[in-house]
Amino acid sequence: MHNHTIPPQYTTMSREALRERVARRKRELGSRLVVLGHHYQSDDVASLADFVGDSLKLSQQAAALAGVEYVVFCGVHFMAESADVLSPGATVVLPHASAGCAMADMAEDEAVSRAIAEVASAGGGRAVPITYVNSTAAVKAATARAGGACCTSSNVRNVFAWALAPAGQGGAGADKIFAIPDENLGLNTAVAMGFGPADCVVYDPRQAYGGLDVEQIRAARFILWRGHCYVHQRFTADHVRAARQHRPGVRVMAHPECPREVVALADEAGSTEQIIRAVANSPDVRDWAIATESNLVNRLAKQHPDKCIRTLGDADALCIQMGRVDLPHLLWALDSIADGKPANVVHVPQAIADDARTALERMIAIP
Ligand code: 13P
Ligand code: SF4
Image (tube, rainbow, N blue to C red; front, side, top):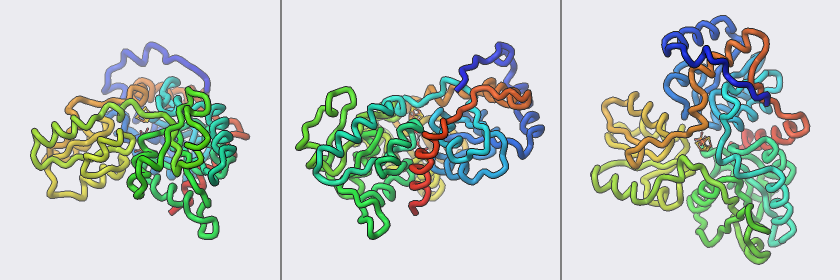
């Protein structure tokens, strides 16, 4: 990706002027352009996107784009990479060059490839890697080469079930799953599927052989890469207990990137889309404590003014990297496209893109 810095004139414009000029640029570019936005974007940016969704919806959206010249991805780097991989005809622009994902940064592709080889050589049955989309395209490619697939927090259970199903029944025939890079998502999903923490071991990439011995790898049903999202990691069991104490009848819902003890104490767990649906489909529940990023939670609160909807713990939980995509950077991205010199183009090299696409398409094909 080209690393450009925003020209100073964008940062001194008023919010109204920025919004008006973004809308004008979008009208000018018309059907040549699609602006995609993740639920964790600010209200300002989300309200100017053509589609807002969670990781699954946005990758399905990117895969369905035809004839679009430019995708401006208001999200983080791995999402722009996936859009590039899934819509090869379009030029994908990430408005801020430093909008990365802290979790994706915890799984470096060479370390992942080495770990996959170590786990395979340990024996104890066939291990299939299942990689959360919050990962680099190179890690997705390594996943596909080892017979695995991607997942998102919306479909992770179905993808795990696919991995463990016999090959004769359309599955991947795995004896064990290597879940990369989110330890919490892997553990929460394993438990939701009826397995116990005793079926899981944690592979720490900072230690030789993941800090495990051969017997531990052989015996495990789930090997969990030691990575996490700092936005969700900060929610605690005490937050859940305090919410229940101070807000009797509160319904607690947690994103599965949260620690196991938070999900265990919550009333339900789900991806951002599942959280939005749960609130919409529960007219009788008036009080919600939600453990996920606060731009989404605060937007839900505005959309349901008759309800009390708050971030669990009552302090905002913000993804700094998502927040880097703001109105000035969005306008700058659109201006650069209109000038014929798109800034911050995200392009995945062909050899990586082909294998990463396989991992993403395997996921999209799983019902
Ligand atoms: P979902 O979009 O799958 O809910 O994941 C949340 C997230 O952390 C995105 O970075
Ligand atoms: Fe990455 Fe967490 Fe930010 Fe999502 S919320 S982009 S997982 S750091």
